[in-house]
Image 1 (cartoon, helix red, strand yellow):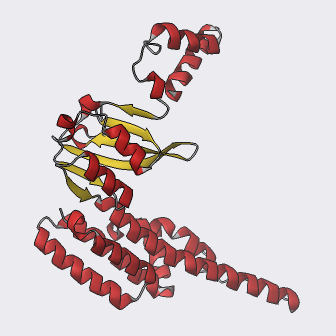
Image 2 (image 1 turned 120 degrees about the vertical axis):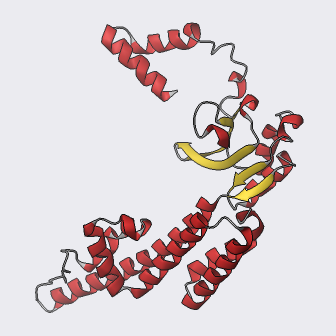
Image 3 (image 1 turned 90 degrees about the vertical axis):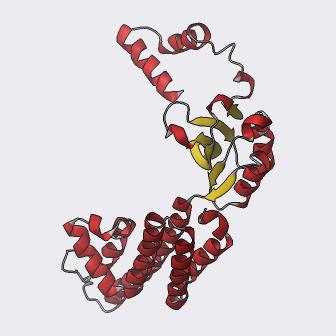
Length: 284
């Protein structure tokens, strides 16, 4: 809608006509907006049952002003035309179920698999609306949890570095001396190193630039726990990306859980527990 409005305004400017009036003419006369069957509820939900397929994906996203919408897509369309099956305002399970059940039951029964995150409301929605579908936990969400756990450790050290710097500055003022921060070999202060390493930790080691390699080496030397957490995150990613056999996958996840237990990171223990609670759908 916004892109159409921008395009209409550009045309109006080019031809020297009133942009708002041209938009109104476009909406009211040049397209079938007034007779659009979904017009009355378009702000709350849209359904495109003709796009339904055997393999669906359901997820929430923020489209505008931070408001959440739930989107159901046909995976076979790969994000192209015909991908969207439903867009529904909000994430409340009962509301979503009520809307999705407007799709004819025979179509819903044809769905074989639905991919979702680990949220309980998504599980309920999938179970109630697509009774014949196997529910599969989106591994992206699992890996995202591990990445957030890693970043949490980095952020904790960053706050500690900020406190240490503030203490040093205050001490310098009291003793009437000049505060000179420690500058590392790559030109970063410790505070800067921890801030600038954020994007390094999102990437695989093989994808690091030379500057990122240098920054990672310094970071891991100063903070071995971040290195340990990074290795846990990457090893989990490796399991998901390189395991096709279900039994083998369970074995590798069990070994990963043991590494997490030995590491003793609270946030990673939470990730491990989340995986354990969704084993059946993660390894599908």
